[in-house]
Image (tube, rainbow, N blue to C red):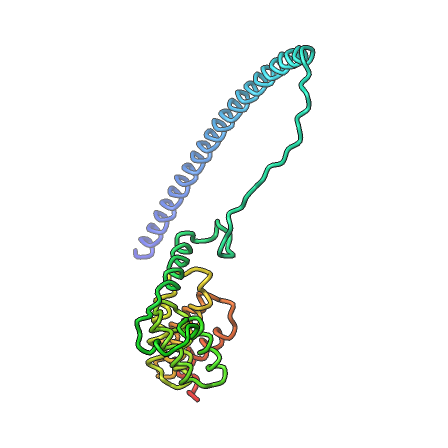
Length: 274
């Protein structure tokens, strides 16, 4: 009995599957017919549109031909009436606006560049001469630019303390010049005054705003010097952030890329600090 029931159930299942297959086949055929009808309708619409466009083109060509014929008649009449004299030779002068920055105007940030120039001009004018130490100095020694050059020469001879003194006096005369803080930060790095190097680099970055191509080199130096000071204090994450900021300004700098990679290895623990 069980075997009979099994055979009966199997036959019913097969019959049901066959019905389902036939129904699916019927649906597929209906879909195909529907798609064919839609395709025919689309093709008919395209043919109609094509016919209309061709009709319009031919009509416009006929109008243009008529217009040209009338223009030719009119021009011939004008030529018969009078022939104009040839125009005289002349020259047009073009004056280009001078650019302070090397970038093309379409690529530059005009507002930021103008702000940077304005800040630089103000910094050159902001001179504080009411300092007791200045009374015994010569006139040229009261110039922040002269003191900056003096500090650079002392730095080149590895006289870092004297260079810091020159930069200090220049900053007291004018505290708006970012290169003074940037150069003093380099001296502090040499003398291992790491916190002061971080402070001066941060101040230089504060003054090197807005970021424009003209101050890009100064910003790179400030980030690298502050990042170096952080790394020497074993604050490697902060140091890596500054090196990555420098790489955003100059992504092709191989030296900065290599240094940043070394810091990453130190952070990951794969390289022992020397």
